Image (cartoon, rainbow, N blue to C red; front, side):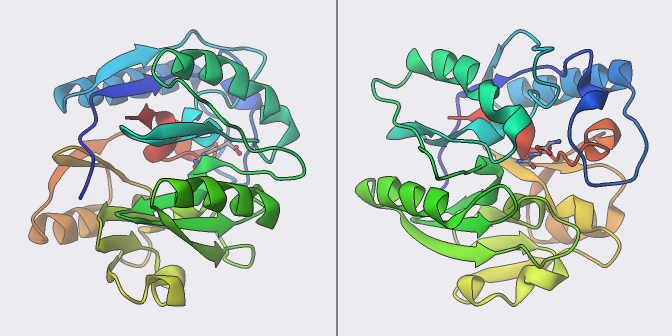
Length: 260
Ligand code: CIR
């Protein structure tokens, strides 16, 4: 079952968005264009049933628009604050904790020496796939798995440290439904996904794997016709969105919001 989201926390890109971290070589983002793309993303969230809670921009943290990495939410059950694996992102959690405090009575957190970016957590029904990455270590994954198990969610680890081209697990695999995943080719045969139906993004469209389901729609980057055709043929309603400026900073559709 997929939760129905009614709220989404977002944070528009800061003026110094271009000073953020990136592993790709796509040039510097245009902040004005990023703001316009972000506004279109927020409008899409509203069209699909979410009240958008927009936090003020944060120049102290150029990557702060990628709010998803700072908390993991089990809608209707609870939320946990992460401990981001990149030093420059550590302080992002404070504003997110304050924003979530109005919705969740308890906000446990991942603690040192654990690190965890929630972009490494792909929830699919009663299972969460947790990526071990350059941002999420085994101790962070262990702490998260312990918290998830208290909420009836099982965890499986997926080590992506040798998987080229992806920063976080969800850059390469997302849950379209509890039993159906969309994957890049290099992750599709991973044993952790053996009991799921796996749709593979066509070669050359790897970025399109970083989509996100929001209620009745799949938010997906525009300009990926092969992926769009495959998802439509599988019965999904798509919300194609321009993501060029976020792609330059390793960001995708899921990382721009915290949904619950
Ligand atoms: C970073 O390197 O942390 C940011 N520039 C991008 C984070 C994207 N987050 C995500 O995919 N969950």
